[in-house]
Length: 128
Image (cartoon, rainbow, N blue to C red; front, side):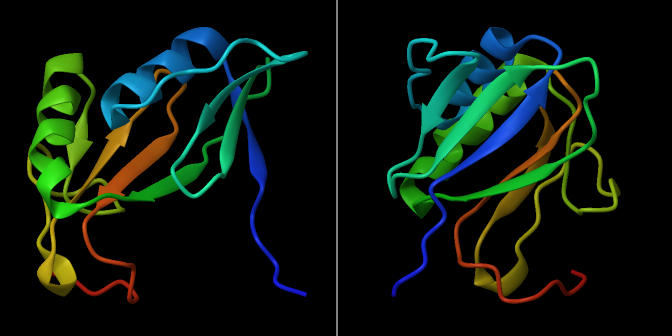
């Protein structure tokens, strides 16, 4: 059996705002509400199902993006006014990273989740 991630539920203070924010940054579309969820589907079929919650705990989601799409995504992050930084610990405010020969950046969504875009697959965290 080949195991694949199908979906995750992402608690949000405002599911519609959070789903639309992420979709806009990634150049995707937020789907129509299905039950309590507003979905955002990635190219590999995984759905992030945003759900309103009073118990929003920090989560991290990383998105592998083509190198040629990084600049547009990064521009939308900056345009959104979201805080962004180079490193998972929050250091490198206002910067991107170039680990593993690619580019990456962490940014906060409206509910405080740490989202990340990177251009090469994660190979284990190293500084620099």
